[in-house]
Length: 202
Image (cartoon, rainbow, N blue to C red; front, side):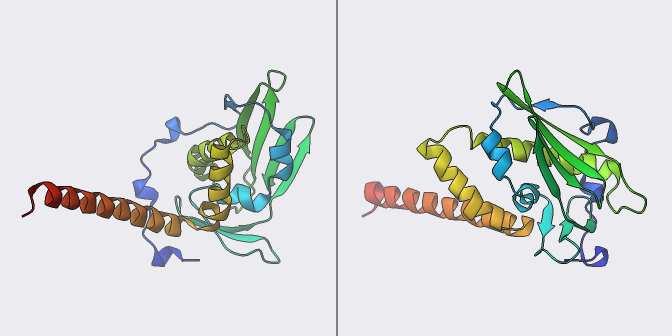
């Protein structure tokens, strides 16, 4: 994990004002039916990796070392997951953060929310939590969408997420995304040159 002196302070890059950040205890509907099996099988490590700004190291005796590259915060956490009466909770006691999901409309919809109860001395403030939640909740929703059905398309993207994307840290994902775009551009350029040579070459 990098220290604050070894990285660029990204706080100045966070453009969203505090007033526009997600508010705790406000439920966000996903327009997706409740899937009990998904929440039963969801692990703490997978949930943390769905946060696009958390760089997670291997589990240790005091929990997973986490670096939030969005708000430049480092901490250890050992999440506790529970599912009771149609309500899923993931608690991160070290930073006072709880992420929740519940069934709505007799299971026809699923809603997501978060709550912060920042303990004294926590490296993750309530505002930091709100800033990371503006990306974490939508990421969780889109991953949840992949479990909406068992079609070939959904199975493929679930496999891709589980075996490829969620095994990378944020830096590796950015590099992979850049390399993918570069490869696509190279392929397009090759096609254009090939078509040009075929029609106009001598």
